[in-house]
Length: 78
Image 1 (cartoon, rainbow, N blue to C red):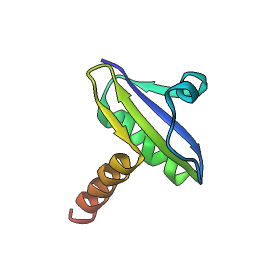
Image 2: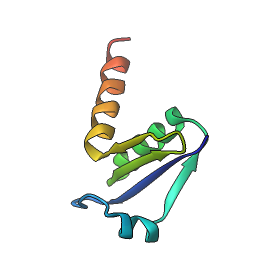
Image 3: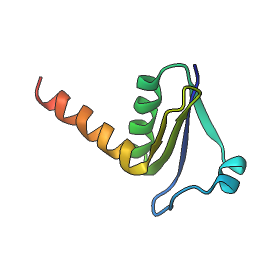
């Protein structure tokens, strides 16, 4: 299973299917690794725009932000 993380500069909008074909992405074998990379991207001043998986997973920037927020709250609760 592969998961692809697409990112862009702050202020980037949603990715159109045509634009996605020309964008670079980073690929991971696990969703947790992809979300970890999305957090790294965010901390570096960029925006994770889309996570897509071969299993049909599709997380837009809002879903990614929600997932990263949940992870952040879990870490605080430890």
